[in-house]
Image (cartoon, rainbow over the protein chains, first blue to last red):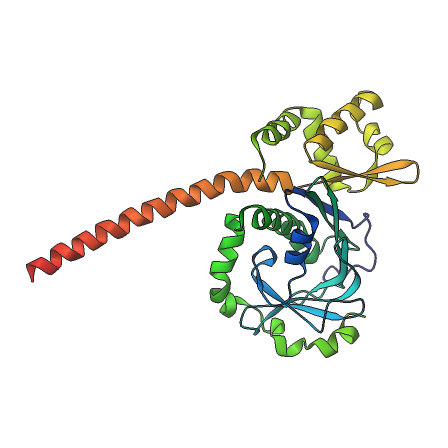
Length: 188
Length: 116
């Protein structure tokens, strides 16, 4: 194959995966933690969500605590508190096209059914691999954080390691290359 | 977090070869229907549906209605929680060892300090 390094144009499988947990807390508690924008999010690898305000069409970027690096960029597709939040999702590190991440929340009897859905993930890419690792991480750590007030060991690890990771982060992840105003164009 | 009865459900669900095979197939082809899945096995469709009920109760499989059919997905979160349960305790173990090391080192330093 001469073009094995090129981005596949269409995903052969459904390109969809789901990560689900029953979280023992009211839906508002889970929602408010999920959509925090000015705090370090241990369930999102210790990143901070940087945005012009979470509403459909708004750009969002997951940045390191010091703002120097941006790991993920996207645009808000749906924002329906406290039930549904969807955004396009692109790793700044990889050349892959954006996929879609949806968080779906339902409450029954004080328990929140939390589902993270990833769609249009390009098959056979680094994005696909990272999503398969990130899905259980995000869902499991969000559950632990809501229920016990602290994340799982994996969540604590990334929060501790966060400040050390800078020198390992590729140059193209620098936030200066991913200003919010440029994202609409970049995500096309 | 996961209570013991949920843990029992997860391990019970995992304790059958066919059910583990179902998880393999759903990992490889997420979103397949019950019919397609059942065709991968020699046992009846009813038997596969019973296995799916066990897997769904344990939270290892998620099903989504799509018209008249059901699409099936693997849910890795319970497996992550099992892993974290014990890796967390290993973490605590090493944290304990480090504390001991710290105490020993500080004792040594204090003794060394007395000599000079």
